Image 1 (tube, rainbow, N blue to C red):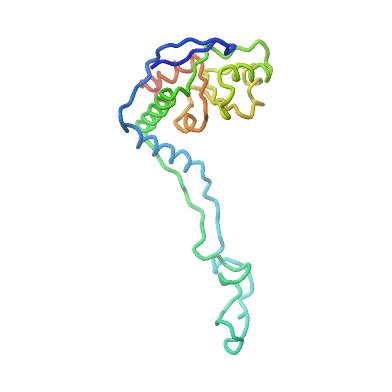
Image 2: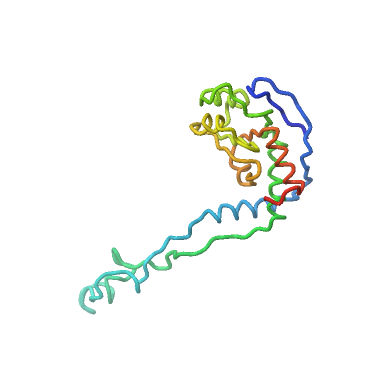
Length: 213
């Protein structure tokens, strides 16, 4: 599959073929959905807790007499219908964690990478090499590649200190390593810019050369 390869300044580009696995039909879509749901579920803390009538604090005194008040019979101010009372059928702490096998994760990553590449949303840069470790320099490089993308994911095998310093204050830029990228990362950003070494690492992962999925 052909991808655009940019020079380090982002101003000129050529097309080059990369050995990206291609999918037909819906193969891998179910795995991609399962993995995305699992990643988002695993981010949930599950610490919310509501008080039941057994745990809420308050008076146990009967609010008014049983008959003659013109209202329904009520035994305590801690009941759910009262202000500061208990919560009926409310949420309680739970574990949302979902476990996904490495094989399914790899298939989801392959499908996500293929879809972004097919749609022309992945670009390759020869290397992240800046004349100065300045935010404006990094912003100029990314603007030359794509000036309209609201969120950009940049990927490299190993990050240089200068690139980190120049990128960390850009609100629309998120950095990750090629060894850590996952299907959720590829799905969240408008544009993906990956270095040549970074895409080599990703393709090696997809081909099973490493087990760090």
